[in-house]
Image (tube, rainbow, N blue to C red; front, side):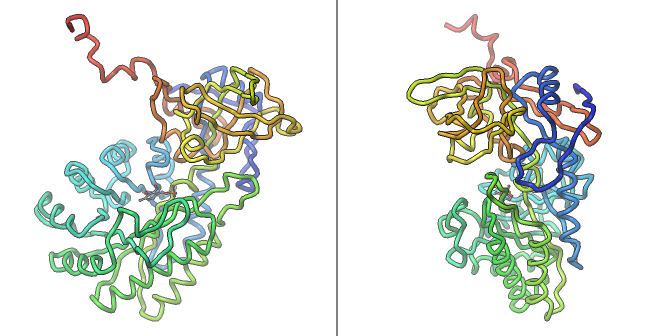
Length: 436
Ligand SMILES: Cc1ncc(COP(=O)(O)O)c(C=O)c1O
């Protein structure tokens, strides 16, 4: 593990979308000098402060609360360990995410396993770790029974409301989504599993992605609690927990506003009291947020290495779409700042690009920015979730390193940059000489 210490560190835990950086230009240059660019930088103090605020907001539930961080958003065991220390569990969707949690010491019911088209070995691993298995289909009951000999003591099902809920613009319409059980299937599944000896049950849904509208999430809570009530009334099943899924958005754009944890928790509690209170039902609330947990507290720091002026003005970075795919993939906005030029006037209009042989390898298109000079550091904000995790190796690009800004100000490398050896590791180069 490489370490460097920064003195005179200024940390900003203020408004989420003010697009400030926890470090100034000189500090970033110091890090770049030691580790090279590009790098992802995650802010441990800000992540911890955020999940503490989340936990405090949701502490109003008498049946308890647990956030299960969506590992896919930032699959790094150091981050998982930090979150575990803060009482945050994990939401896994695959064998490798389960294995990563195991490495980080996150096991048992701290893990919820929500998968689809699940291979046998993934179920085996989830069961071996004692994770809460969240089934995506009624037929998976028999699969699980066959694998383990009997069903686990606790089981959860993923609900797809179909026409009962309009999907948000990013995740799409639930009717077209491959996930989860229909309403009739759900009742059938709980009945079947209860008959086979399952003792504790959970209910899960996931119907949003990057949604900043508080009411959308409250509407989801209403849907889930109404189902919990019906399960009690129709089948006599008292749920142990309701998992409201992920999908709370982050303000990628400076003019957007974050969902306040307290507003969300208070709103969910109001609906919980209204629907479940009269029946005396008390259950644990779970969430599996990824993006709003780490997203705003991670940055992709790159260097401008080329500029080019043809029909448009281009700034070329030493990072590319293979390091951060969202802008190229779906035109997602990531705010860009140039350390040291935060207050400079935005006199230029640039396409900020990477070096892939793909014309959609653009971090920003026709973006007003201060004049960028070759050699400047360029920071892409909201890089803490669904960012490096979505990286790839097209054009043989090597994926970047991940650095952690620790609470005390030291910077540690929590994942080194890839090397050519990593890239070629799956090739048997020794066989080449004899190959004709
Ligand atoms: C099942 C499931 N849970 C949780 C998440 C996390 O969503 P987000 O990072 O938007 O909070 C996802 C994201 O794809 C998901 O598929």
